[in-house]
Image (cartoon, rainbow, N blue to C red; front, side):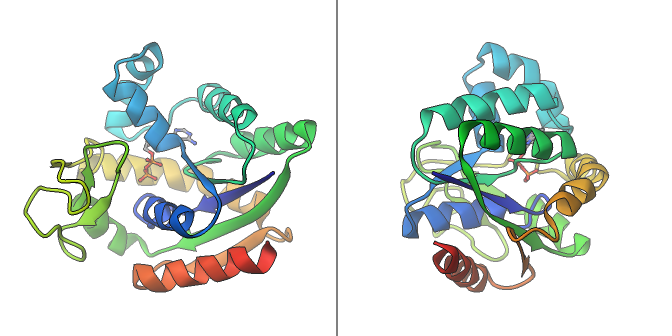
Length: 217
Ligand code: ADP
């Protein structure tokens, strides 16, 4: 079993790319954002605890997120690709300690980078399928659904994430800037780290990711 990581700012396309990767390769997609949003929509104890932070774009505390991730990893046997985790140096260090203790290998850490100006346009225009089993991601500018407000794939209504507003994006970007560089430095210079330019059409990024994953398999 191996664990891979997709790094990058909110709106860099990590989630979209991870969803397409698992259609092509034998990988399990674990998005901490999706797990937490699911908990919020089901109003579980966890969901109620993290709801306010998530809506405003602040990070959820490290021990909560690490707890969720380690529990999930203990249940999985296949290769995993993380999207949205680790997001702080403490999470990266804890993940490494956990993987070593379980004899799980770290695979690729792919950093999808993109300029800040591009992010706001992407995030504010993002719409996601409300059916969690589908979770398709659209963009009103670059990838609009065929019927306004309806998912092309499953016909469920699309929704606008409550943290996909300009205001929450600024909080998310501030959190990202504060915590990301140490995570990036933790992996940069290791044999796991790969850099991918995110300011390109999603299909090109997808092809590059598939190539990287196939090369290291
Ligand atoms: P994005 O990358 O587009 O901001 P995510 O879906 O990854 O979106 O995350 C949404 C929210 O979930 C974050 O703003 C934060 O509140 C919470 N979250 C997700 N992953 C983590 C994490 N690893 N550590 C702390 N909070 C997290």
